[in-house]
Length: 184
Image (spheres, rainbow, N blue to C red):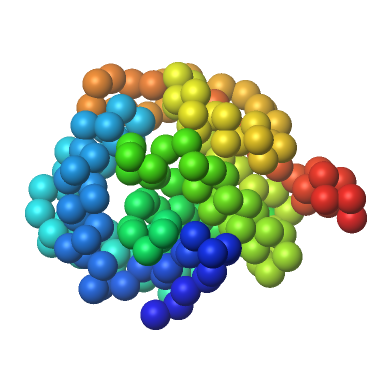
């Protein structure tokens, strides 16, 4: 299994079929919380649904279109971070993520996204990284701001969630801005 160790507490694990049961349990236990901001939790009803997600993630990676990783914190699976879209022609990577409610507030998503940003610019040669979040998702928007992203605008009526349709705050980070932040 591919493991990317970020620090003594945090690793990213390339999704594998054997993770389906544990990932399903995590989704099931956090269904109400995740459904505030994501459209898919109500549709994950059995471990086979998670297996299908993993299979599609692996297929997307094989095509060079996506990359999804489980987040392991202190030895426990706590969420997902991913390139939801890799546009090699435009040089744009779009990051998405979710984290179990219990693990919020530990800097986990910020560190996981930071690793993907470095990878996107250094290894994939991307020119821009994007993150979109529901306008009212203040925790997710704070991640973008901590990472130095610029709010580029708001997409109105961008996504249907279980409780209604939400607008998305669209954040972007250019390679030149990232290098400037790093002092490169």
